[in-house]
Length: 330
Image (cartoon, rainbow, N blue to C red; front, side):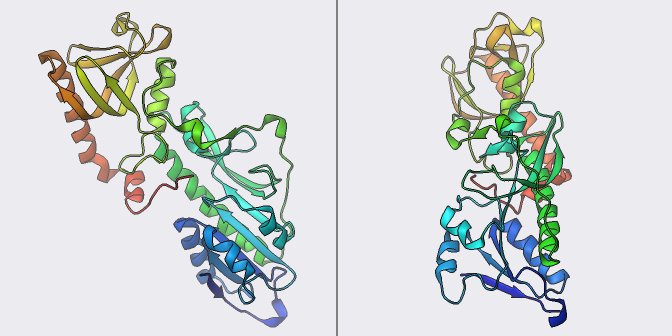
């Protein structure tokens, strides 16, 4: 069912767009509704879910009206097919959570953290038959800090997307021609869902890469849309969900093989590739059995660190914002 919102000013000031169709997540819909309430416009705005879009377009009463309908997609979990795009005759824009052309596809904010990028972007681009490959309309830089997690970077990106959405709605409603810059598709990287899967700490990562992998998969207090950073230690039997790790100094590596763990001075140290190692800072125990005293002490320290961090979450804006949100599974 489409939610149809129309605000009229004057018949003498009709906009070039006849109506706007908005497809997206909860934030996109809420932002669109706020925009419609803040201004008067002769443009009708239809807010639909991705699953309902094709049916709505097929209906005799709900389909696009007039000569200039527009489609805007933001954080939609479905690929919009060519038959739908044809109905809008090139007037279709997607607001992508990632820098283009090098971060096309799925989970691109998480990948930016994982690959050590210092910046990503929220990018509006025209939609074509190739995912995230159309001309760029507008890009807002999104910084990624040294300690950002997958969640905190994603929250910053969706705020930038919401700002682009309001700008885009205004430009379309005012009948302005949108800027467009072709992408250099020779630099294109497109990430797939399968690329991000796998909960177990990869043994081929150096410690600095493994630390980023843990941060990228940390969506606490929400669930990660892809993997849950996990360490499985066969002996003694211990499985940990990793929330925070740090690169251990050279002395702490202790000639550990990748994936091998050792309790040392109240800390758990895990070997990584190329003779590097991680020190576990915060983790949650899911499986535990028959731990030696030194291991029990190290695990207790991890649990206490997790409790202290949970007590401080109320002071962190990212977690406060996240409390009422869900991470899209795309």
